[in-house]
Length: 147
Image (tube, rainbow, N blue to C red; front, side, top):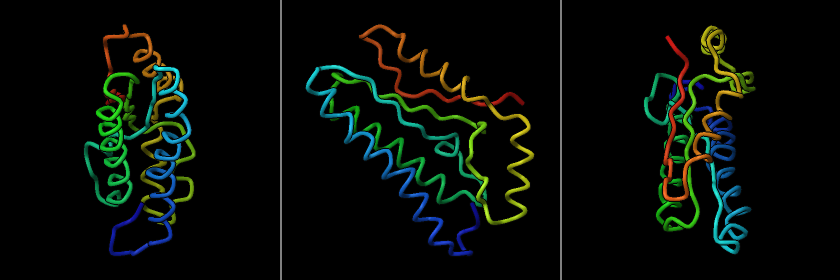
C-alpha cells in the first residue's frame, strides 16, 4: 500500500502472487472435483477496493478487480453447474496491512480498524449465499462496516 511512484515492485509481486495467483490456484485445486461431482460453490474474496480505488491502493485494488473478473469468467465457463460468489468486504479484522512499510498509511489503517468487521460477519455473508435455492446464484456480496 503505497503510491505507485514509490516503485515497490517486490510488494506488488507479493500482492499479485497472493491475490490473483492464489485465487487461480485455489480454483485449479477444487474445480476438477466439483466438475466431476456436478456441483459445488466457489467463493473468492475481493474487497470494497474492487469497487472504489483510493490513494495508495492502486495495485491492491487492481488485484481485487482481477478477482472479480476471474470470478465472472469462471461463472460463465461453468455455465451454472457450479456456483461462484465474490465476497467484497470492507475493512476486516485480518493480518492485512501489518506489513505496510509506509508509516502514514499504516497509521491510517490502524484508525480504520477501529470499526473493522469481524471474520464472522464475512462468514455469515457466505452462509447467506450457500443457503439460497439451487436456482439462485448470489454473484457478489458487498459487506461494509457502518459509518
